[in-house]
Image 1 (cartoon, protein in one colour):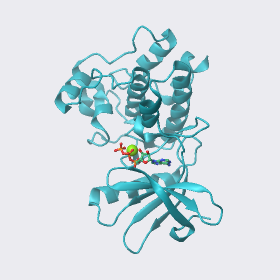
Image 2 (cartoon, rainbow, N blue to C red):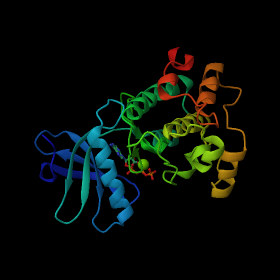
Image 3 (cartoon, rainbow, N blue to C red):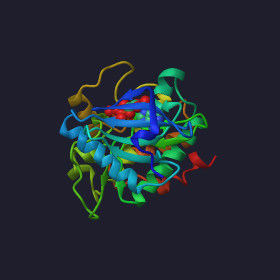
Length: 271
Ligand code: ATP
Ligand code: MG
């Protein structure tokens, strides 16, 4: 019972992604609310490729920690659309901007859910490659789910040089810039853990870790900081468990970084 284009009506625009628009829609018969991600026929080939990739991945996933998909369609006009579970609080990025920084206990709940999602994806050989606050969706129950699989990758071989520049550069891990130096045993999954570590730092401090508050990112400076600097860490005000946890996410050498399954057993998440 997939939802088709004639079953729904648009209510409002929720946001704009790269090349697409996300609408809030209502199912006419049941009055249930969904989000509809549309890439229009006139958008460029990259965006059209991305939404197809997203469809392909959402088709394979079924986890409470990954945004649920309720149907796909392609209109005669060429518009491609995905019907998604509606997350009524938006993203962690909007929450940060509206309510300010997150408490440690809230971040532990966020981390537990994102790691459960990553552990599911990684077990299914899917690397998200764009984990960041604006791609983590939230609802009123404070369920956090991974969304936006536009640049994700399904690994078909065990080893794959997936060091192409996709995703949001700022959240990219050292081994994605310099696999020879930081990518001993490089398989790509650890990059999602790095991005999660940066995401938690940002939600705790209120600004992106490599840049002082308010500074606009500049690509070259950022890349140097990621590759040649020490990994960012939490301020003294954070608990020892939380600091230790973030440290395990932000090991520069990818093979030393903890996996999603390992991090789920960390004391920070068990308190
Ligand atoms: P980028 O990843 O480049 O920052 P984006 O996250 O804005 O882009 P999309 O993932 O396409 O791009 O989503 C656009 C916006 O639509 C999101 O930021 C979010 O506010 C909203 N949105 C997306 N999916 C949902 C959903 N399932 N429920 C509620 N809102 C959603
Ligand atoms: Mg996004």
